[in-house]
Image (cartoon, rainbow, N blue to C red; front, side):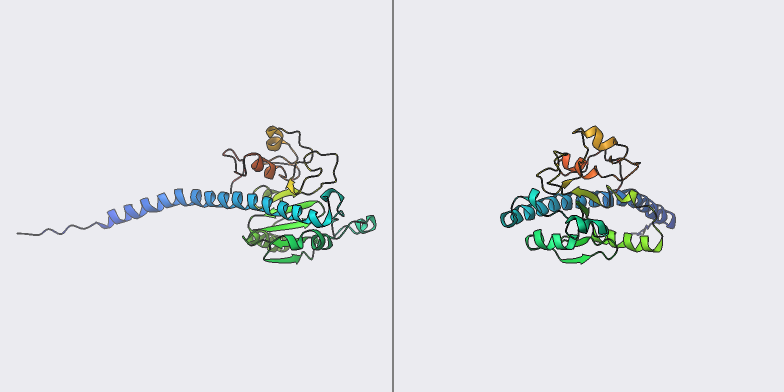
Length: 234
């Protein structure tokens, strides 16, 4: 019996490779974006839980948080005369022994405390602001690019690379922060999802005049899940 051996032609092989490449080009960015979203959601929820557990534990020793010393911004020399503590002093007194971290640094430009978390995230603490970076490496790359002049405006990073939280338990003018722990930035919020999304200065949208400070609150409002209609790409 005669045997006929059939194989793929070069054209068929090239077509197959092309199809595989096309499918990969369409699929991999989606999978990567989904992975980044999942990591962001997980680390945001974990940070919120960990930091507020630490504050609750600290209250046992130091009393109600609304009566704690106020933390100033290290780069504002006038605040020292107002009795405000340096960020490093405040952190050492109220949080250091109640929170797990991999290591701590003091930012030599801003004086903020840089707390590297065990899951690879980072929180910058200074004034009333707790700026949370789900990926510490992103912040380090940003610093390098900013110093080299490659980045002139960091506004586009908010709501994707970092998220703004506020600790102002003494702030009687806002019900979302008064006597509360570290909460997503909600100062000035009217309680509507519409404002979280569309406020021209702080809303979670493509173009804002300040930064997208309300993005963390929008995600929290959705159960620490990034909404399907989230306007920013990961």
